[in-house]
Length: 118
View 1 (cartoon, rainbow, N blue to C red):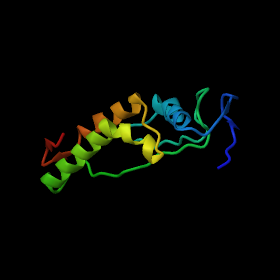
View 2: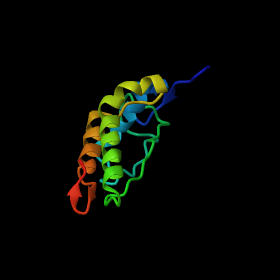
View 3: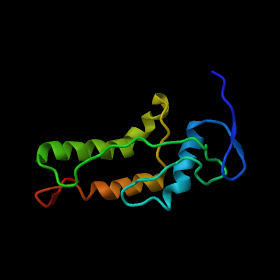
């Protein structure tokens, strides 16, 4: 498949690679709000691919079923840690470490009847 390098916000021509997509996420990591609502389109960074996006998952902070809630938390912990190693084979860009750490901190807030499920 043919691809094109595009000029990003910093004026550099960048090819559409997984690394360039991760660079876009890293470019907005410092200003990423606590609820993660952010756009990666035209993100800052000399290596950032300008047409990038995130995959989202919505999880209730207060879980109604302890076992299911714990399973969700354990899966998401795996996804931002060991699961990152599988992403390239699935054509997903890994999250930058700073973003994964923010996600991990939010996972610690998921609870059942006031008890953390982390």
